[in-house]
Length: 179
Length: 198
Image: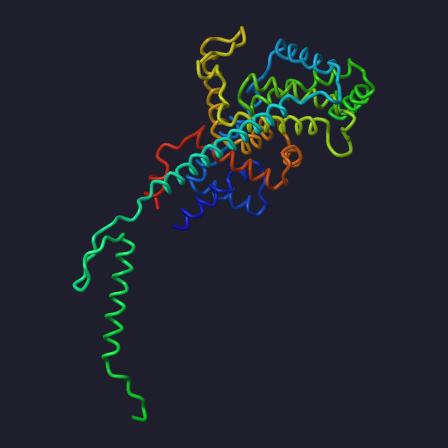
């Protein structure tokens, strides 16, 4: 297990070791591990190979030919010799501000359309609301009367309240501690 | 020509350019253009964008040459800083489209005339491998590895160019190196092998 942990440690420090960025004592420790442990040695070889590949390949990546460089120089000269006016419009900036403006306008329009539809739907909902239906209400003591559902509810509530009031009147009064 | 005399020459050329000498501008361009182009290409990985960034960088640098302070940084570092900044703008603009059309179509870049076909294929394959590996890195790590191994900058110079502390530059190189190691030299048996040996 200790051997494995040492290997992991060496693996983490290997790039710094190859680049010569470690303090002396750590460098010596990694050096010893490279000598003693085959896996650490393999890791060292692998990372060193990567570094060599990078050092060899990266400087060759995108190497331009003289023709390309000449054509770019011609463009640079044209841009440098172009009359420079301090108030020259920044087309990129204008493009971005125009795009933002258009986007903002569209958002506002979309919001307005949504609000308009929403308010129309709300008013439609109000106007389409059903009026209370008229129903025939009958009690044992009264003749049938045509009432709206709201009125029926009120009448029922009154009846229920009267019944409760009668019940309360019939119940004995609560006893006080002195009685 | 020694490195010291080359530096003195460059400074003299910069003085001449500031005075408006057209020949001095051309000399500066000749001296730095190839390196700047390589930097641009390695960072944006696209020929057209690399050309655009190079032109923008040189135009900006030449127009602002009087703002260059030789006591603060070397001219190369200043020029690299301008270029990296413009490359970053390009990443932002083209976050999802950093692909060279020649890569999609598998077009071959012209090999040197004296090169044998097998050598050309091997060269192309190794360049493809390194380019593919760079594609897999984040722009920040790509900047670090390209400046370190592609242009041989010191960590101090890198820190100036990237605009971060030196330790951060070091750790970015380390991280990029670790990631590239796995892409360029994948291990066959890897983790299973390690676990069996515990």
